[in-house]
Image (cartoon, rainbow over all chains, first blue to last red; front, side, top):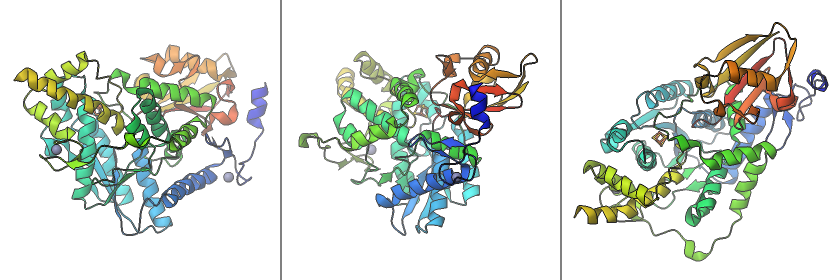
Length: 360
Length: 96
Ligand code: SF4
Ligand SMILES: [Zn+2]
Ligand SMILES: [Zn+2]
């Protein structure tokens, strides 16, 4: 009967002491009401933006919009903060259409509704336009192994190109604290030092590519979903039909298990990673431009062009199977996480040499 | 007692794509949330129960709201569900 007692006893919000609490904050354990939640949620993101100098007046900012919860809340928050604090930004919604029947075409409908709601211009750029391949075509060609590798590399570049078309000078994405903590763990487990070093940066891609930032770097997934729920934001939450079964990955499950015991773990991991010190020799490779498309990369040709070359010559499948035999394609994908995809891509590039030899 | 259950964030896909379920227990006037969750697993869930229940509670990453407020305010899984309660389950595990 103790529970009934707990339920009836109406505690008040720990911030305003007036209203009924609706949420226990994962970061602090505070019990707060709806209005106070909106305020702290918005203020914390504003603080992240200001203290990291993410924008300056006059910036043209493309919001990477997938129609999912994070980017939908990001569009809402960016619009709201831009007005409330007079950032002076021009905002755009940028959606990438991978060409996945029944998945992306539905989520794009959500983005179109967001466009009307927030009155921000929307650009949809498709893999078909950019690469002349849809994900549907790619899966037909290579099957369901390694599809996310293609998708991730293509998306990363597509966002950049779309932003350039919008004459945007910055990109923001909806990656949240949970996503970043998960990436830290994965890079740590794989010993991927260069990515471990970069993945907690709030701004990435500064060398030649457009700067990309993550205003939700310190924002918990739980609060993003609660915010969307209380504000009745309209988002899309179906899984991609080509997501590998291992999609959710051990790192995510592990993190969620730890979080259940100790909710601050997510921010703790990010803080740890921010304080790592790396030796000089782990510096990133020098950036160059792709000799085929001009995109920033660290080899003669960029990953997207490399993958396209294989697709167009019908070699992609052969190449992937070589990769799989070498045990390099570990299929730890996440549609939310460019880092995973790019990592695997390097394995594909490594295998290029092998295939070239084979086909000669 | 009557309980209303709402599923979202992709979780409804495991429950026949139905977002709202009403359940009536004519022989009870309260039920532990844990028993309700196991009841849902055994009677309403159509596929992949491991995406909903792990170790006799909801899978970590699924948010639960009791009458529109975070279940953690009411003791989480140890809460006793009463007549006319609305229990909402939202998955946070689907792509953003
Ligand atoms: S799961 Fe994500 S990365 Fe993989 S094919 Fe689908 S949208 Fe692309
Ligand atoms: Zn309050
Ligand atoms: Zn290129």
